[in-house]
Length: 186
Image (tube, rainbow, N blue to C red; front, side, top):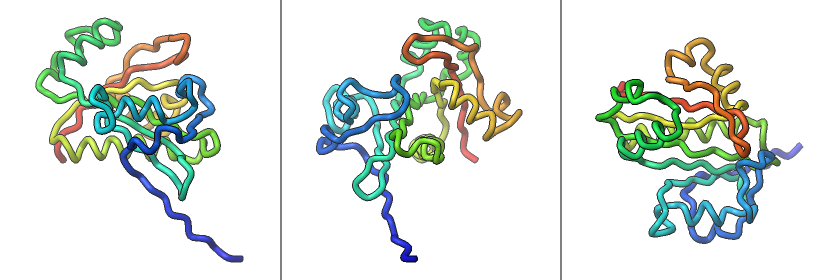
């Protein structure tokens, strides 16, 4: 049996990715165009108005997943947290001196879901943020699947590593939680 070598890639999204087909099995993660177009125009390197740092992961010519993050000021973070009633002012004031990194999403193509690539991409973004900042606050919304995955990965330690909000419901996102974690130099 011949074993074929397959090259994987991980790179920043670029303008050439506008028409690349990308669909997950989760309707809430899909764009109207079912392409990477919306993500390209929201990336800070591809558009003047872009606010995200977006990476795509693939295998030869196929896109397997995409992940993105946004650097926020504490003031932007605080406004979002308070407006959405995720946490009280008192619960987040200890993070006031930190840069905030919002982990926006890690979507995996429906052809490749269940293979652990989502966790890998989320871990990559965490490590990438750690390479940029000495200390920062990770801020993310997680759905039920990711919540289960975090509990499986960290066990009882999950609640000591992450500050976890109450459970919220949204028509598009369904049940979700907000997680916060301070990362400091080792």
